Image (cartoon, rainbow over all chains, first blue to last red; front, top):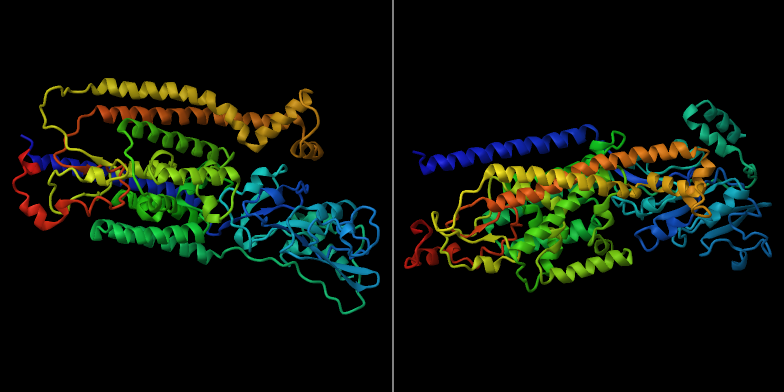
Amino acid sequence: MAKPTDATNRREFLGASLRGACLLGVGGLTGLTVARGKADDLVWQLDPQKCIQCDNCATHCVLEESAVKCVNSYEMCGYCDLCTGYFEPEPNALDTGAENQLCPTGAIIRTFVEDPYFSYDIDEPLCVGCGKCVKGCAQFGNGSLYLQVRHDRCLNCNECSIARACPTQAFRRVPASKAYLLKGREAQGA
Amino acid sequence: MRRWLNVVRVAWAPLLLTSVAWAMERFPPPDFETAYRLPKTQVPLPRTLLQEYLDVALLALALSLAAYLVYKRRSRRELTLLSVFSVAYFGFWRKGCVCAIGSLQNVSLALADRAYHVPLTVVAFFALPLVFALFFGRTFCAAVCPHGALQDLVLVRPVKVPAWLERALSLLAHVYLGAAVLFAATGSAFVICRYDPFVGFFRLSGSYGMLATGAGLLLLAAFVGRPYCRFLCPYGVLLRMLSWISKWRVVIYKYRCTLCGICPEACPYGAVLEPTPPAGAAGSRQPRLALLGAQVVALMAVFGWVGSRVAVPLSASHPTVSLAERVYLEDAGKVKGTTDASANFRNSGQSSKELLDQAGVIAHQFASGGWLWGAWIGLALGGMLFAQSLPRERAEYEAERGACVACARCFEPCPGSRKAAADTETERPGPAAL
């Protein structure tokens, strides 16, 4: 009784309804996620408040040279002559000698400003994000040196390798429009 | 002076109380007498949203182009060019992140965790290939996915994988998909990204294990076509299922099938189904659908139970659970010393009990998620057995909709694609005569 055309039609009808159902399903799933989504993109950033300078930032980034680098919050900086972020504990002399520096790559540039103040700038291409200076500055100084993901370098992996290795879960996704968790006055975006 | 005013100004902004804490300097910042001005902290910006939208537009364009090249142009050469573009742009230029494969984790996490706001571009990366699969089959795999395109480009001498092995291995992808959703939804890990074999190449850096796995898989891909896509890709499972009901499918011949048997040889992915003996041949038996259905349910129950048992230890992948385990062991005196994480936890002033409770909740999520994971694997296995038991008649060579990645390799060798050859081949019985 069933002509071949009927069978074909039935199969086509079944296919079409299944397709429609799946389209609805995908659409519903998308709609649900869109409703909970944001137009803004998400990027990784580390919260300097939670950072314990464990050195994982330097070694766990998928980039050979980590995307995390040190930044100096100048308005918090004491411009100290004896900078505990710059110098080894009990340095031989307060000069730029390599043996006196805490930074393993010599990435901090110490410049005389006026007596008795020195400015400390980060030479970003040299910084490896180990956080040794951050630790020194936080221990005895103002805590103006801190680590941040530099977004000119960050690949924004879907799962950040450093976030995975971070012992204090200091890494989190932040909106790309506010891509930095800065310290000091700059924290307000001023 | 200006600084102190500033501190006063922020002090009554309750959200910014922390910046007051920061402002308590041991060494008050100097008031410079020279012309020195405080530099601003440089904040290089991430990729703009516009670029993200461009990526989505290019994805849609590449998907449409792939469908056009497969269905209208039927051109392997042009599809290869598109593959090269996809590897170059979606792979090396965008460094492989975020991709459609990985995006399913973001979507899972967004569905499970209300606090996570998935970016709309990621949702687009997830949904677009699925919608295309509903109409055109796996054109995303064909030449748009950088992983698929890369493996396709390195294929030099395809070796046939026996059908039983192919089916068994493709179950791995189902297990992987379930695991990826489970880990992502519980907020533990993005396993697809963590164990991605090729993204290390796209970034031109990666851990030794990642690069070695990728290199091994690429070497394998030179002989076994697309091993990742066929046996591992979790997103491919979704595309495969949607392709089964796609509106259009890859038809190997253009004019008619001459039953020459060339296409199964031309397909490196074992996706061409051979014609079946005519109906009513000896040995064909009506399958017992109820029994098969019961078998699926039984498999789901058994695997679900196994899954719930297996999943709980896996919850250690969640940072809170692993920290709780460590703290518990330290408290019990079973391990000496502290890790960075446990030392930080003890400084935080949170009690061990609170942490263990949190870990317990997550472990519980894993237990119930494990049921679903296992049931899903049981369903995949049972469904496969079910489909195997159903007799399907085929008069001609057909591309298996789910397995066919629309690579267009079978079109050119097919004599039925050339009008003259299809017309003159009259001495052989056509499909209608069978």
